Amino acid sequence: MVVQAYILIQTDVGKAAEVAKAIAQVKGVTLAEDVTGPYDVIVRAEARNVDELGKLVVSKVQNLEGITRTLTCPVVHI
Image (cartoon, rainbow, N blue to C red; front, side):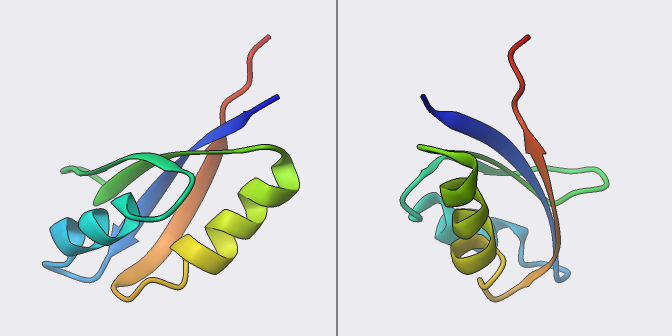
């Protein structure tokens, strides 16, 4: 089973492209794009379980320089 999530990211002013490029290199990230709107970067990530996904977000994504806020939205298949 694979757990997937979208991570919506706000960055420091002018850092969206740099953050998206850095996040794209993180293992478990399948997509990272800088966008316009209330969030600056949208990331799609996946892991083997919810615990691994949480560790990915907290230890690998949120620690990157230039990120001010994240919102993780798990993908739910009903």
